[in-house]
Length: 135
Image (cartoon, rainbow, N blue to C red; front, side):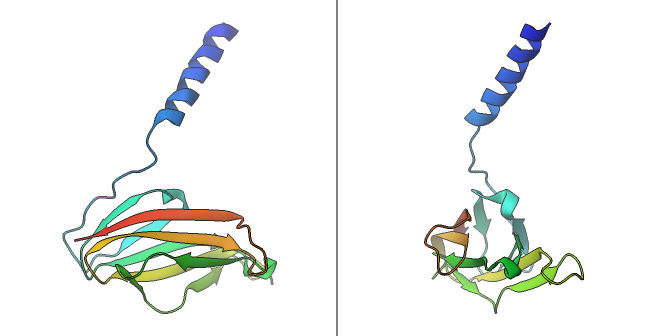
């Protein structure tokens, strides 16, 4: 009985490892419809229309000194203002969600990269990557 359970668990776990991490986001025909993604969508290929908005929500706790830094998105995406942080609670130092807003500005392909790090440290705590294709 234990052998069968272990075998089934092994097959499920190994099958999950073999799956592709790059998943196509459904293309939107409406440039006015925002594409909303988060940290769980790391590795997605985003297919966007020129003029379409991208809203990226990531967990953050600024009181720890960690900040998200975005790079690689120009010239395909243009950042719209500063990232906005909303705390999950009213306690000082509470974690929350930081939302970045971009617009698909030019046709082409780029790699949107976010690094969660303390500015004085070289190694990020977390990295997110999204391939962006704008038609």
